[in-house]
Each structure stands twice: as C-alpha cells, then as structure tokens.
Length: 339
Image 1 (cartoon, rainbow, N blue to C red):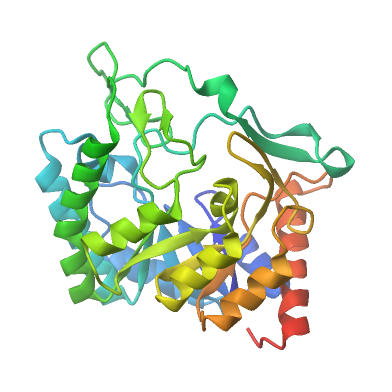
Image 2 (tube, rainbow, N blue to C red; image 1 turned 45 degrees about the horizontal axis):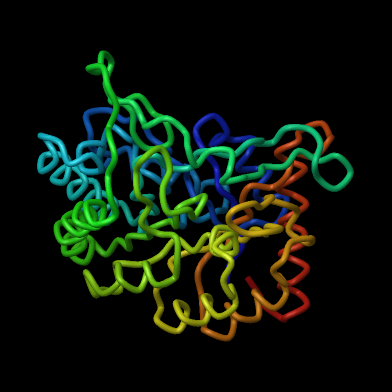
C-alpha cells in the first residue's frame, strides 16, 4: 500500500509537489488536471503531466474526474451522447499510452451537493471548520435547472428555461449501463481501470434526481453489469461510512474481489440523514482496523486523505493534509507496512 495526495488545478504545481514529498507522500491523484479543451485529453498532455509529477520523485496513481463538458450528454442522455462516449474512449486510450493506469469518476447529475456547511469555522474539535450534511434541510430542494450537470457546473452558456425534471432510479441505471457497456471494453484494451465514486451524500434523491451509488449492493450490481478487473471502485471510505453500514465488511467484500482501485481514507461522525466530516482520528470508523482490513485483503494501491477539516493555521489546507498524512504514516509504521 502507498500513501498519496490529491491535487487539483491551482495547487498541482511545484510547491505542492515538493510539499507532498516532504510529508512522506509517494503518489499523486490528479483531480481534473487538464483543461477541458475539445472534449478529449490528448496523449502529449497526459504524458507531460505524468513526467512532470515524476520529476519530483512521485508517481501519478490516477486521474480523478472528467470535465463535465466531456460527458454531460452521457449523464443527461441528450443528443451528442455517443460522440462524447467516443471522446471518453479516446481519452482512455491516450491514458494507456501515457502510462496512466486509473481514471476515477462519479456518475451523478447533481453530484456532491447539499452540505449545509463546508469548511466554515466552528462545529468541530477546537472550532475547526467542518463539512456537514442534514437531509431534512435539502430533501425538498428545487429541481435542478437545465444547463447544469455534475456538482453544479454550467455545461451550456444559454440554456433553455426550465428544469431537468424528475429522473427515477431505473432511468439512471439505464444511462449508467449504456456508459459501462461502451467504455469498459476500451478500458480493458487500454489497461486503464475505471473507478466509480459513491454518491456523496448517499441519499436516494437530490433535486428530483435519483442517486445510484448509495449502498454496497449498488456497487455489486455495477460490477455485474460489466464484469471486469477494469470496472472498479474509487473507495471513498467516508462516503461508505455515511451509508450507515459496516465499513470493515465493505472493505473486505470489495477488497477480496480486487475491486478497490484506490481509497479516500477519511472519517465521519454519524450517517445519513445527518453526519459531519471530521478529523481522521475522531470519527465512527476505527481507522487502525480499517487499515488492517486493507492489508488483510491484499490491497496494494494508494490511499489519499480527503476532506480534512479546516485547521486554524497559516496554510489551512496544508496543515489538514499534513495532519492526516502523519496519522496514516504512523499507522503504516505500527503495522509494518513499508509504503
């Protein structure tokens, strides 16, 4: 197993890569790291990105999330869907040629939405800024507007008036099935694993749109639609905990099946309908036992800290990530994991 760090546009730069090395990180997950461009991530740009990260003594473990304009018509089942799927296929082939072996993605229209506080002051240990969710506050929210997809991104400059309406769970499964059936064979050919992220928050519906990945059973269904080593899971441990399930059992279930591509190693207090994203050492999941479970199943991928509370310090993000990585490195040493 290895400890990684997620970097996104704006902080995927020299200083933050140096910071990653300084705190003992060995791998990087690059969050939507390249411009949307013409709907495809080109081979030369992908290779340049990988070599840039490697020049700091780090490895590029995965790319996380496609730009919404690369696949909004896939999510919404609109004209142009097949063209966008062809572009995703091209991106996967280019990733394979560039030596980048994993693409994390999140098949959701509304996406991460509805938290009533996000990194604001107060509410956490010592007044740290937490992210929190309360389903009662958002379950009757207005329907999502047209021209918007995936975490509120605008995908049309001048969308027609109105909303996306209500979209039921069967329709969402049909759209996801169509996507998998067309991209998994290409992922296999390219040698690039596809890693689906669970719905965060894992509630049945937001803004009138059903959410697919709110239970372990949903992931089992997804793996059966397209049985392949290359159809895997971006195992966000915090989101699984928010489901109110036995997280250690989920690690063992999907770990023994070799479905976990990489891990968001974070902790929460509570579960749907109300939860707080807390420090790695104070949530409901015993993180030492979780790490033992990853070792037990033979997981040999990357774990990255995620959604750390905002610390009151110069460089709040840096302090939060260093705190989480230090904890993870201590657990590695305790368990004799070389990393």
